[in-house]
Length: 304
Image 1 (cartoon, helix red, strand yellow):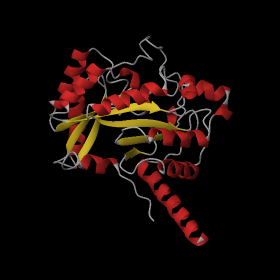
Image 2 (tube, one colour):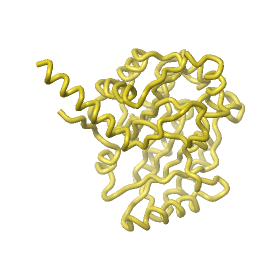
Image 3 (tube, one colour):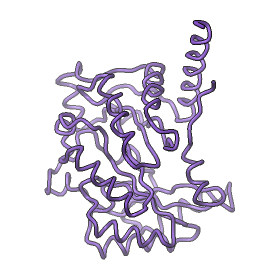
Image 4 (spheres, one colour):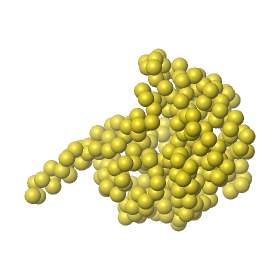
């Protein structure tokens, strides 16, 4: 049986007609792990420059950033519609009037039909959920919650500043507001075994989520994670792309088929990586996944 899963495009097609593209924006938010509330260095693994497109300049308005993104994609797809992806830092971490103003600015941009708001689980109070639920009455709204792991010992090690119970509570509360909820998980965090990672999958399978974004751990230069890696590299699991594909297939076996998979991996710019990356794009890794699934199917058939 071929490997199949619900894609993020499939998920969007259920809610928005036509071709849809996320456009990342940097709205100038900060984070409780950077402004001194919890810390000043950020989470151990984090460097926003590793995933934010170059056009996301917080000195530009949200409208201008979206205009640049829309212009780029509409050259190829004139009828395309767009989601403003509030990606950098913690995008629910500001006074409510500021949040409202920034979200409304994004929704007023040409061609934008909704929001995807990335945030931390400890930054989703009920008044913010009320605001997002109100906006969802006239536009698509998804919350993307950075959970990263279900293991509290790892959350402490990487300096997240919250436990898994906080994440589970935030996700369940958001779902009660009928908001689309997705989560972000990292596979291969220091000290976590394969069994730990598969236990993670079993735990999150019980959450009321609609989308799941998976990333392999990347150790970025000039982060606390790099210092931990240099001092104790044996804590860090290492995978070849094929080994990671096998792990992902085992992980997904626990995830309900109704959950759409947004991504399987990420690839930061090579110059930002403290240890070599794979140099694979998401679609290239997906081909490896299909090959591993086919190998397993063939092996199973041969054993019959």
